[in-house]
Image (cartoon, rainbow over all chains, first blue to last red; front, side):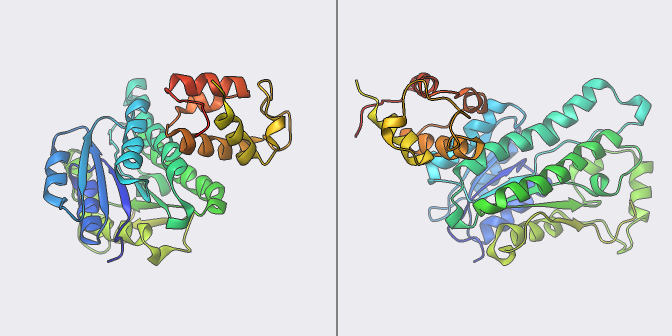
Length: 245
Length: 81
């Protein structure tokens, strides 16, 4: 198995892409510490955990720096360290440029960017270079190509790309790889929450003719977390079925 | 109480003789204690004292005395094992 004996933290793991990544990691033998705000994360942990391959859930908000510290500290105390961090937790807010409130902009940056940076700070301090550690960040096609109607979200995801590229350079000498996945239009509660008109236009822009699944993204996360990608760092991999943003 | 354990951490992580580790030794005043040395020091202290610092504490750890004060807040014991 590709992740046998590896300890992984997955944020935003109660549903959607985060839950799919947790399931894929468990299938590859990873020990899991999952987090999310909602109680659904406890169900996911119960579903995936076993005596040989524990899966634990910690409920909390990753944009609270105290919780971020508690999460990484728990991985260290309970599992003796951390090998993989998947920064998946994120929020989407639609709004035209002139219709996006300062509060929405701050919320997007707090959750999608600052929380990811804080978690990376803590996680990379407890990662052991000898265990081939990896950080996987969830960006978005909106952050790499731009997308109208979600400018603040796009800005937050572009920040994820910049942070990924820079931290990969800084952490490479320590043996820590940092990569990002830029999903296109993926079938999750997040995109089902957008307006029907916007949804239809996005669907029509996918050359492969179908919406992506959380499992499509999870497969790439397994690749980036495992030694299959042991010489890959500072990359942003699109998972979008050739979508025109 | 001695703080041999603390001084040894500084000595090991920064690669300097333990005699040079005095209370007033300060960040960025010797070439060994630069930002890279600081991160090595933080890793050493976290491992030795089994703590995880807040980022603000890492930034505030400007002298040996300050490091002792911060570690005390985390309930660390400084006696050599």
